Amino acid sequence: MITLTVNGVSHQVDATPDTPLLYALRNDLALNGAKFGCGLGQCGACTVLVDDKPAFSCLLPIAALAERKVRTIESLGTREKPGALPAAFEAEQAAQCGYCIAGMIMRAQALLERNIRPTEAELRAHMAPNLCRCGTHMRILRAVRRAATAMGGGVRNDAEDAL
Amino acid sequence: MSALTRRRLLGQGALVVAFSLSRRAMAQVAEKRPALPGDLDKFPLLDSWIRIDADGHITVFTGKAELGQGLKTALIQVAADELAVPPASIELVTADTAHTPDEGVTAGSHSMQDSGTAILNAAANVRVLLTEAAAWRWLVAVEQVELHDGAAHAPNGDSLGYGELATLLSLHVEAKPDVARREKGVRLIGTDLPRIDILAKVSGGAAYVQDMRLPGMVHARVVRPPGYGAELIACDASAVEKMPGVVKVVREGKFVGVVAKTEWAAIKAARALKVTWSKPTTELPANAEELYAYLKSTKPMRSQKVVEKGNVDSTLAQAKKSYSRPYRWPLQLHGMIGPSCAIADVKSDKATIWCGTQGPFRSRKNIATLLKLPEKDVRVIYYEGSGSYGRLATEDAGEDARDVARALIGTAQYDKSRDERKRSR
Image 1: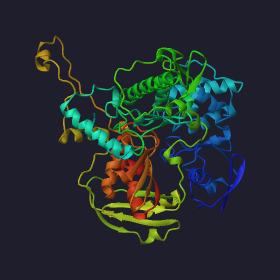
Image 2 (image 1 turned 45 degrees about the horizontal axis):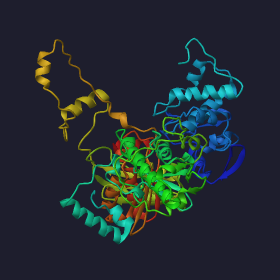
Image 3 (image 1 turned 135 degrees about the vertical axis):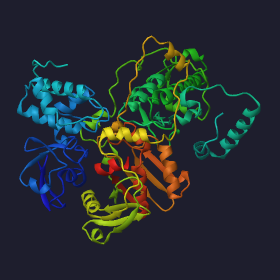
């Protein structure tokens, strides 16, 4: 048994210590948010927050997480009461197949918690590790800008100019 | 009258079969039915597309699949617009071999043309029937009946819900061609309707086949040969079968897979399994440049003329300027962001497969052939996967899951690892 703290709740998980966090989240805790994309930390579909920083859950063995706090998209609100980022993604209709979106939102959440007024360049650099196969990038960026504004901040237009 | 299909045979009973046969025989000597729009021509019966329950619940059926292109929302929008009901009152059933018309493969931007047009015209037919039923019930002219918000309304203020009207008529009738579109009232087509699937996708809701968890389900991984034409020489399962959580090592011909109680145990078992393969008969070059040279050296399986218009040679000969350029299409174009996944529930006499196939009826045929079951006993249900992009027009995760589940006679979720996916192309 391994103890995992996910979305503020402590869970006893019956999994081997080498199990990547992603499988514990999806299979043991039945959380759908984090997705298996590449399994190599190259696409970001599995992105969750570990101690407030974005992490590839497909690569992190649960043994490495003893005291660390894991957050998934399920912590950002419900379907009925979505948090600022999910609501902004819905408002901007920022999904096609949607498989990458939970990872995108968690990466964006890490940025906005740290800096509610990032520049456009900071936003784009921060989001770069996560890939979208459908080409929804411009809507995804719009959604993060919308969420930043809704949270009381906003993405600053810098010299690079938001398209 | 289109060919008598299994769907109609199964769904409609003996009386209808006799009717269909006689109509078909008649059609050979008498008039040919005028063509109907889109796939309504292949499935002319209205209840292939739209059903209205006595409680007013409306179900719309499409043989096409939601790949992230927004199909579900668009089809609901089309049906709701023509039936004059709020979009939320329509339940849409997508590609499912047990319930929907066989509209072939979801590809080539054909879904609105084929299915959207069929649903639009079926809905227009249904609207006319509902209007006529209300007019008959109230003994008024059809022009005096107005349909909106799921009910027919009479000039004197009386109203009848679609459910009640539906009990007065049969939608098991053929569509008429050239039924006029609805003229009056609020329109949905042309408005921006939010997609019905996005909220679940941005809030951790169940949205993909990977999110399905069936009771007693086990997990599988397939161990692939290193390349085309490699034959299985040996497979030593003894060590792997002793690994914790491993249920079985499946071997059938050159198909090798492992089954475990948990996904991670299956992955570890697949990695640990000692399999010896012969040298592949075909080795694909490792880099893109060599790959193009290799492709050019192979013999095309078939060539296809897309357009034949005018005389290319004489036109080019007369051209003032001509350019010659090679154009290459990247081979990885159809890749998805994640591996495909399928769940198979295989019993000795029937099978159900959930997967992201763009051609569920084609998948059913392949799966039934390999299971040696009649097609009617195999059900393929489309369920969204990790994108699609044409890759799932030739979905094989369903077939892999079937192979694993057949060996177990049970339920197996099969989720390819990235490496396996690359090799299986």
